[in-house]
Length: 115
Image (cartoon, rainbow, N blue to C red; front, top):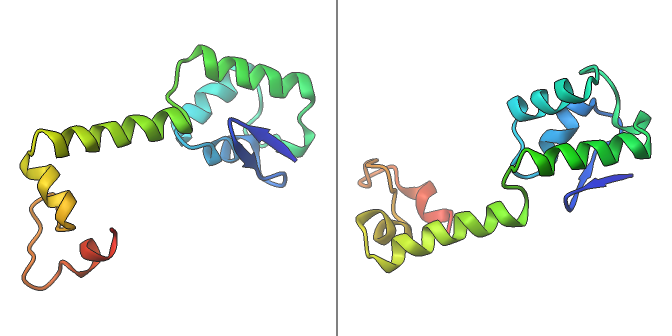
């Protein structure tokens, strides 16, 4: 079992798709990481050695991505800022209404469920 940045990587997937399981790493950034380290995109996670896992973590830290708890904290602070300045978007988010101008007469059921 391979754990990186508080997330478990699936062993039977390729490293390209396995890195996307980390919160904050997309497919494009996963591709960049694989390219910098010289990994093939079809290399399986279970075939990684401990040295390669350490290299991956060093590259991710050096590229200064916002990952896992840092990214979650950043998103929470953005929402809190909208609440504090009482912007329209913040008030709509707090009430549970659609934020981006969707109609509320008939189609706001999903926005109200996501509280």
